[in-house]
Image 1 (cartoon, rainbow, N blue to C red):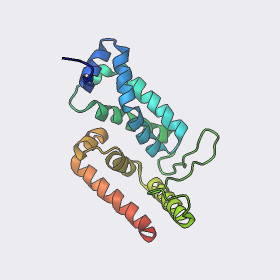
Image 2: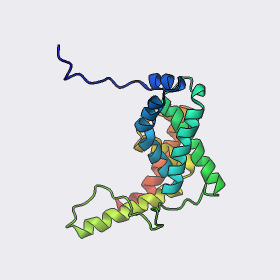
Image 3: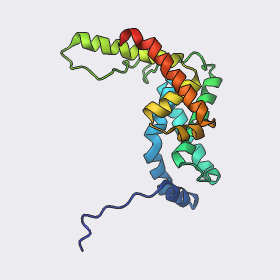
Image 4: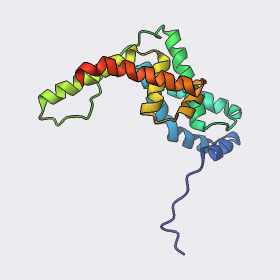
Length: 197
């Protein structure tokens, strides 16, 4: 039987962790490749600074590698990894006194990034483009006004797609608290964006 059409089955996270613990650097590299974008998305959403987010991503994987022996497998590897990243984001905010006053994202040159748009309009519709930019700016502002716990719940649920149970493990709080925070955060965002929609 020809093997041309066969594809390698990706290793499970647990298998990669086991191999990484035994010194297989390629196994850990695969875990990094698997989750670095998602961790970066969480960090950028929490910190609003590309430079700080990249620092947190690097530190997250460095800590994960150093403490692989602490991963028990009670939850998914990415849940454990997100918990590390979330704690580092909170630490970063505390260090810089940013718990309430987070700055908008900047690129390496220090200029502000264009605001995210909702359902990007065709380039030949200037009114729609301006409206989408305004909605993006208001959404960005509304997210900045949420507490870190409420922002984290929105990011983990709506951007990362984690279940309530997974978010509960990441944030180390009861599932009911996750649901309550998510309900509150959604209400806050809706009330701030109501006049635009």
